[in-house]
Amino acid sequence: MLNAKIAVLVSGGGTNLQALIDAEKRGELGNGKISLVISSKPDVYALERAKNNSIKSIVLPRKEYDSIADYSKALADTMENENIDLVVLAGFLTIIDEQVYNRFPNRILNVHPALIPSFCGKGFYGLHVHEAALEKGVKLSGATVHIVTPECDAGPIVLQKAVEVKQDDTPETLQRRIMEEAEWKILPQAVKLFCEGKIIVENNKVYIKGE
Image (spheres, rainbow, N blue to C red):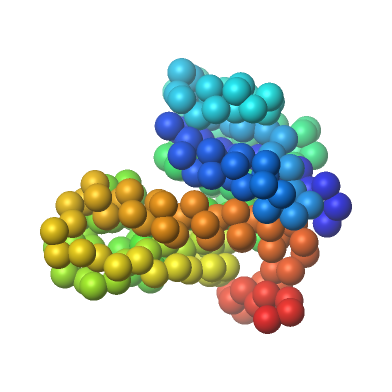
């Protein structure tokens, strides 16, 4: 896909957005270009990151819409109007419905801070994921990039990367290590694979061309 237009959806600081911006500057997104950042909240630092890198940004505040359906329609309409090819959820903490999935089928990526199917699904976000991993005493955790489907964290897995859990880890230290060693590496890799047309989805599984 030549010059694939990427929209990154955010709700907070935008660390994964920054990882994608840095990867694009290094030429590591293949044919992809981040052309839009959409935030579900005003005044978040992710919007500053977009501004600092001359990326168009739009704020769609969730609280201004009466329902998930109304919000989802506005979001999908906005992205279609911008001719977006790929949607990346990067700390986007707003629920959306099937309108978005149906209009961007197999074109929405999310990064989850654990090795799916462990520590995923409803309620597993942010530090809650790492608290659960430490409570279980796992020796490895990591990150997963998957295609988003209506069922939470259940879409086809694109890439995974394992990260060692250390005995003295706190949820905060484990979160940071997984970001640095896994999320910020495999998210740009997955975006590149998509933009190069190498991701094939069959029977809820991802096959990567050439591997």
